[in-house]
Image 1 (cartoon, protein in one colour):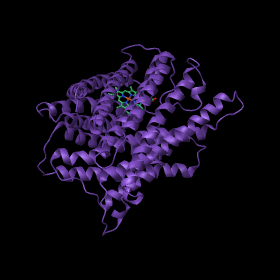
Image 2 (tube, rainbow, N blue to C red):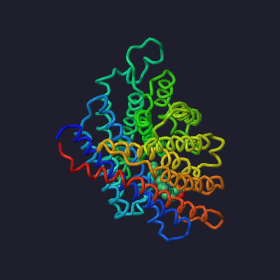
Image 3 (cartoon, rainbow, N blue to C red):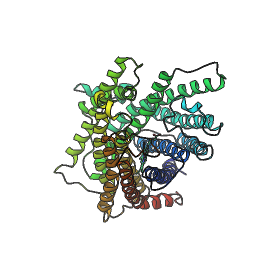
Image 4 (cartoon, protein in one colour):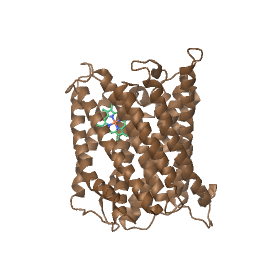
Amino acid sequence: MNNILKLKKITSAWILAILLLFVLAISFGITMRFNQANDIKLSPVTFYSLMTTHGVTMVGIWVVAGMMAVNYLLSRYVKVSNGLNLFAMALTVIGVVMLWLTTFVGHYHTGWTFLYPLPFYTAWEKWATPVFLLSLGVLGIGWFVWSVGMLWQILKRYSLPQAFAWQHFKKGHTVETPPFILITTVTLVGVIACLLTAVLLLILYFAEYFSKGTFTNDALLMKNLTYFFGHTIINEALYLGVATLYELLPEVSGRPKFKMTWYVAVAWNCTLLFVLTAFFHHLYMDFAQPQSFQIIGQVASYFASLPSASVTAFSVIVLIYKNPVKWSLTNLLFVVGVAGWLIGGIGAVIDATISNNFVLHNTLWVPAHFHTYNAMGNVLFSLAFFNWAAKDFQGIASPLRYDKTKIFWLMVGGFGFVLMFYIGGAYSIPRRYAEYPNEFTNAKLLASAGAWFAIIYLWAIIVILFNIVMKCIKMFSVSE
Ligand code: HEM
């Protein structure tokens, strides 16, 4: 079998696995919202086990969705390794099985942030703590090796300054760096940095676990490491989605390719620097944290998101405004995804401003903003890639006929679902409550409405993914 056909088959398998886990994880989310609404009754342990499974699974699948999309598109520029791709897939499957065993059989339920020292308060099966930590290690190793492999291939074709597009800072350069290569490089460096931090974090956890009480970690250091890893990786997942947008949106719209400009180069180099320090905004309420870090947190939160988001929005508007565009499900998903990213980004910047954070910290405003730029941003970038790839595998486009209706219902469900979180946040309703006390008078109603909107979102997703799934399944019967 030739390499391209192999790559298509592996990519189809990724898409099918990711979509299956996505539908299951959305169902867990809807179940949680109905429980918060008091429409169903789960035990607190079941609620928090579902919340942990939902959080880690969602973060994990959208990180690998971005990686496999970027890997597929990289094959246009450099040689990609199918062996590493399969290695990452095998470790991802093993990691997910281990993780789900810990939460569903072992009842592990620290939340996806597993904040120190929670994993040691074993309110679950004893084995579940080490197995949960190991499952993160297994996932991390697979993704680390794959990311290093991709970066290595980029650096074999482009020098380091070219991969970062530094020659575009001044006039008269001879080598052009495609925006896709720049964004992918910036993002993979970030992914590698946060996976290395995860390794350090796991070593510290296991050092304490095996020390039998002779070694205790520093709680503030552990929190900093956890958020450096967790906050950064989910942001990098979004940027992987943006890389696919830069590569595919002009092409599927029948417009000229995006060209590298000095401001695109500056914006994404800023992102590399600032995304690694923006996580400090998670520690505003930790008064032992040095004050300078708090200020860096606020400034970095602005500079990590604003340059890349505004440059991307500007490029997309220039591409479509008053221009003949060939609309399809793929570019509709990309454009709505940019809107979701911007709305969620504004919500995030509001919360990352220290004076606002005193009010919004750990309220439903937090799931509001990150669900907006994930469920209505990055997920749509990945679905756009899946839709494009499924067509690329078979060479058959699906008719546009009902696509606008599907997007309409996706927007009604998705934006309605997150709006209920935003209103809850504005009313200071806390996040991560399995049941709301009666003092929060409208919390249950908002939760119920949120769950029904999420059902509309799920229905629209299933309708959208039907064609993609059929084409991916057919891919396995294709021979040379
Ligand atoms: C319509 C689809 C979705 C539904 C119904 C849903 C529902 C929920 C609910 C009810 C919570 C708990 C909120 C709280 O009280 O704090 C939650 C948390 C979370 N969700 Fe979603 N969600 C959806 C999509 C997504 C997506 C696409 C992501 C992608 C990253 C995601 C990632 C998370 C994470 C990381 C948490 C935090 C878990 C924790 O605190 O440990 N969700 N979700």
